[in-house]
Length: 379
Image 1 (tube, rainbow, N blue to C red):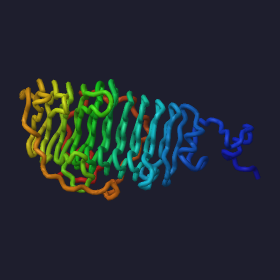
Image 2: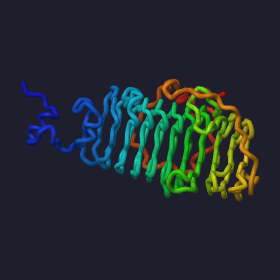
Image 3: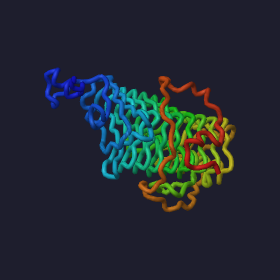
Image 4: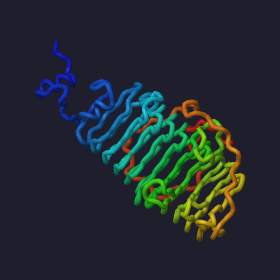
């Protein structure tokens, strides 16, 4: 009987000890190597790592260009932090894709893209991660798509510190987070398109922040999103106590917010304000449906940083406004106690498109958009 053709046999034929691995174009985990990190360590540039169902208690650090890490079943391939490890994936190399798997129970972030370019996060479930579900920081030319995030005390999806970003966030669901989507100093070719940000404490934000690189925030486009019912008590508390807000812009400039449904947020549907000495400037809200919120629009620029030419359709705001009302926020729950996510669809076999469709293809969404992927019913 012939001996099975194993990875060990490859090493022996190649004249290498297992400590000096040849670089491989495709690796199956755990059939060939027992951990995702072990596969990353021997993968050649441009390789694909296929991960079969199982729980992988590891932090995966990806420093090799062009890797694709793809689970065979989204809900059954689980990178689990066990509330011990900080981050599930740390990606520092360019051209890396993370696809069709679950990351959960990390004390910081599920998937973190840091400093890379041409990244892709597709069909990922990021649940019960303490700060962020999926975070791209100082990263450019990327896509975050068809993913789900819940149970994070900062935000489900976060893009920050990029100029120009050239990042598309599309077709995602965020619920039971402090904030669904947060863009901090995320400027230039930044597109947030066709997402469901419902049942968080705050729906989506664009923020200027001196504490991190590249302030102020400018030139982002938000089109076709459902931002509804953001008053979820069974979620981690927001660090600033924010609650009941749909869309917030703090010190941002020249943002376009168009064809979004902003409804059922009991505090404020749209909050436009300053951030320290950074004013809201030239922000445009066009063709949105803003309805059934506690207050539909609040203009809250401060005397220190008065705004200019911020328009909601034909109604424009300049100078200083009124203080932003702060409804009493429920205490919140630990990220570990947030309910598990519903089943999410697997990535289709068909190749994913390189980029999002044009912004003009995103229409005003229905109130039940992606309801089948969400825990929170439309109220």
